[in-house]
Image (cartoon, rainbow, N blue to C red; front, side, top):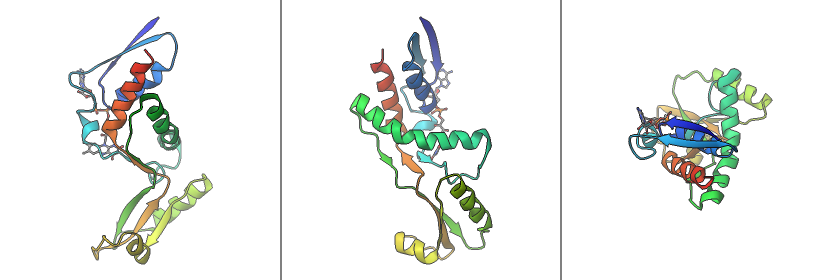
Length: 169
Ligand SMILES: Cc1cc2nc3c(=O)[nH]c(=O)nc-3n(C[C@H](O)[C@H](O)[C@H](O)COP(=O)(O)OP(=O)(O)OC[C@H]3O[C@@H](n4cnc5c(N)ncnc54)[C@H](O)[C@@H]3O)c2cc1C
């Protein structure tokens, strides 16, 4: 039996612990000076910016793309394993655009994403108003909508990863 020590029980340590807990022949221990998800993870908004990121190739894009796909299976997998509810909003994210902002790079990204099998929408002001009437700042003249990105509660996700990893012991 091999022993693995993980230092830090934020989202990263907890995710590594969960993935390693699925492998046979390993004993995994996570060490932290405080309870899980009390540092950066506890402060995070949990916005999952994969498709809307400006990365289109290389490792950084591959990791974002894999992550966005993995969340769709990870959330139900953890909820089933633990009985915990993980607040997860799969309805996408909206990035507001300000007047004078160059939208050409968004058009280029939209075309790149289309060729990669993903979607991005460029909303003009009237479309933004119809979906988000609460946005009333006249300097905001449109938005980028990324329907396949998401948001998750980072603390609840960390706690579920820990609970699921412990179940495998
Ligand atoms: C305000 C804010 C908003 C954010 N919003 C987003 C967002 O929307 N989307 C996004 O993707 N990212 C966001 N982030 C970034 C995200 O929070 C971090 O990338 C992520 O939480 C890092 O996780 P981590 O596990 O590496 O670190 P942490 O969550 O900081 O965990 C590190 C852990 O290590 C422990 N530790 C440190 N040193 C030791 C030691 N010597 N011995 C034992 N334990 C130790 C700490 O106690 C802590 O629990 C945000 C960050 C902040 C601050």
